[in-house]
Image 1 (cartoon, one colour):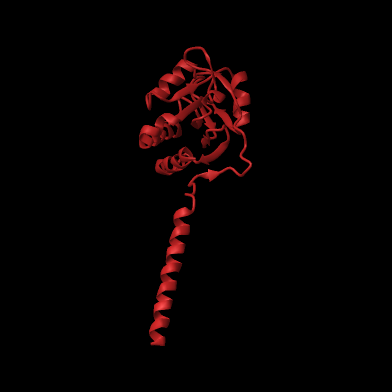
Image 2: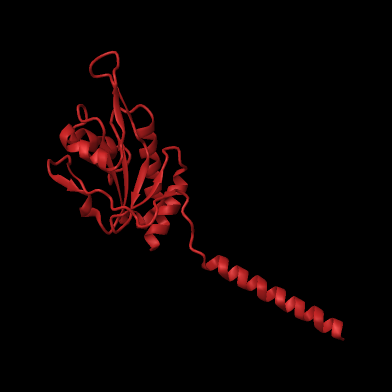
Length: 201
């Protein structure tokens, strides 16, 4: 009889232990898959750049949304179109929450990328994307503020150069803080997963 009571007690303890463990797992916040900035989160550098309508677009105008920021250029042969295609999949995956995000593409090639050309380029991927450019003087502090490296590599003619540049995807949260970054070969589903977490907070 005592042995039976002992085994029943052990079984009850095991059930309680399992239930507590499961409860802790379920209460644990979902973790990000991208590279996280450490707290206190750095404030994203505000900028004001010319859009396709000749007006100034400021990053601060998008507070309240999650901003996905990427630097590239319209003549880019590989990483830029691939990344923008992935970001289109990210916004599509967010469905009705997509309007709580904004993809912004900033040129690293002011010689060839007019504001109009950049906007037309990004709209080939999604009509909701914003493309921005400006003069070298306007863009240089923006590149510096986000740690963007860029270097022109001469081609066979004056206009056929390529631009080597930093290609990380940056995510800015609803309060204007840098929260996450990704290498361009990150699976788009991981980015969508992380942005979904941010949108719940």
